Length: 254
View (spheres, rainbow, N blue to C red):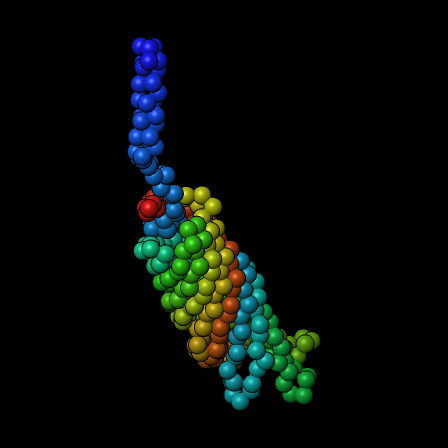
């Protein structure tokens, strides 16, 4: 065997051994970057608007029963609160205030239909203080809420013969009750979320005073007590600007 042939054989053997060693050595594995997840932890302020429908059942006065009125109209206002997320569970507190114009007038005939009483009820404003609990699917949050509700109602009773005689009595009352509801919220951006929710309010039965509005026709009865049972339902849309929220990394496991 010549020297040249010997060198070539040695080179081939070294190359084969090196390739085999390389095949047995695993390359270090670098984990993929952690996928970001949205966090609902933080506080927020926002605005809302929507519509509602209420039932106002005037209680009998001097034995006379009245037809219930079914008020409807709009609500719009502001809200603010804070959330805290643990895993997929989100808990929080929220306060909300809405201006409103929900009203209806119903007629009740008396004296064989020759005269009647018109009852008008109007929701002027409403506020809530609630807790909420929800389950988050990243940027989508399903939640339920419940707590205290406060509202101001304006009342008017008009006695009329549907011709020349009219006597107006008016009164207002601040009432308290409870609210329960449910909704869905979606984080459109890290600091901006949109929501839709349904709420049921119950204010129970509350008394109020009807006062003669200054019409001489009711001067002989300057005031008298009345009471009404009230509940309502609302459907609202809202937007929240969120603070202290961030994209939290998910821990990758291999």
